[in-house]
Image 1 (cartoon, one colour):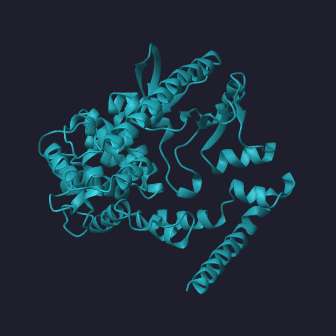
Image 2: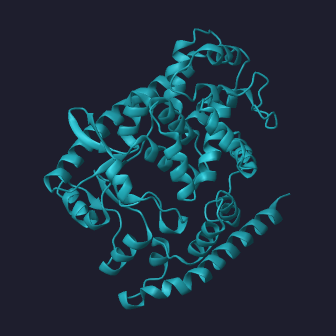
Image 3: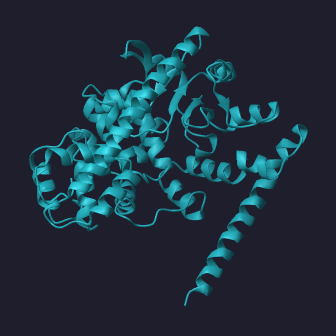
Length: 408
């Protein structure tokens, strides 16, 4: 939890009161000293436009709304309560519709005997937050086995979904080998379901043990439908890797981690730590646990605290994450800064090398779209990608140079 002085517990990153209020409210339950700190903060004459805008950007406005509604302080403007309430109700209605849609998707896949595991979205909102209205999500994420991906796509097309990607057969095979998801849209893009066969693309150089993931999945009930969900240990590992991949740019991704920990007191920490170390995600996990402990008040067992404290590089990265959340510039996607930050999250040299090589050489959908090649020549994209990256980097530097020259 942020300290009363407006700094993180490390004492090195001062927080604006608006940001500190956001951190205080970014949790499922609010009570005790944190609730009192919230009351103190709202009396300071805050920039409420900034508070609301930050909450929306970080995806935590449903939680902010819930907690501010319980704080009886006249210093909270009426328009703030009204706007947040409007956002909350709109999100609640959409989430209920998305939950019903998930049931249809899973039922359709079940008709085709395609095993599926939904994660994030409504399932995470219900299991970790206790209420689908308290979490923002834009789409449905459903994991199937790699061999079933295109059967799943065909099944969802019968529900009115259409693939967002127009790919040749050769590109589809490359997509299965290199990426992790196939997005489908319905109702002119208002509904999106992503069929996953892995949790991150190959270039991120993280390999979840998918056989073990499937065997450890647990059944649960959601609105009368029985479905498989990840084990608590696998869920936490997925959430941590997803957040690390995006440098924790949204506070909501850390709230997911915090809420999942608090909702699953049966987490087998020794299993989780062993899997993180086995898969080269120990530092990512350490960073996430440090930040949620510091900013969101999550309590982890003493042995786990000692384990994460032993990684000094993780402590430095946790400070950077806190700085990004407090408003410091985040490395731009696919920039050199992003590559360096991503490699710093790896404790094993072989994972850093793999990530560097794959990021540099692995073709993306953008590469296929920018230079269209016939199927026999698709492998040429491996040779063309470094030149395309260099050209893109040069264009960015030139644009930055022109921009600075135009300044008065």
